[in-house]
Image 1 (tube, rainbow, N blue to C red):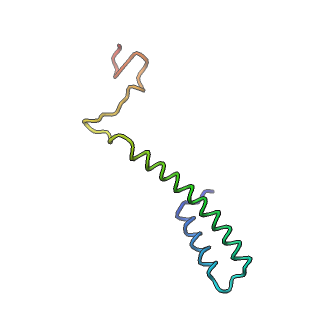
Image 2 (cartoon, helix red, strand yellow):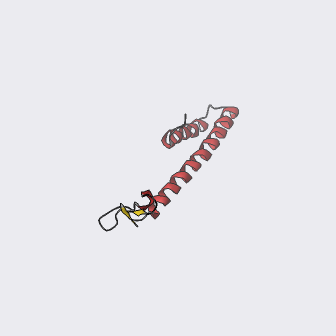
Image 3 (tube, rainbow, N blue to C red):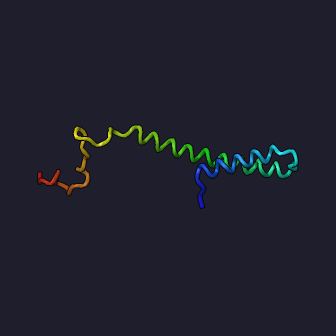
Length: 86
């Protein structure tokens, strides 16, 4: 099951606070550190994907309006444009 970015962030924050405990063993701290690095790497990939989606949305033409109606030509039969034959 894929966890959300927020769930991963909460887990990373917990790992970080666990590492700072004074009673943690070196082995446990190292294990938590390794898990945190893997988690952070996966989160970085999630952020890159989100950034890519945002860039796509920002570069789309303006939303449909009276002056910018949807272009439906690609859905018409060949030789037919907007319901009329060529």
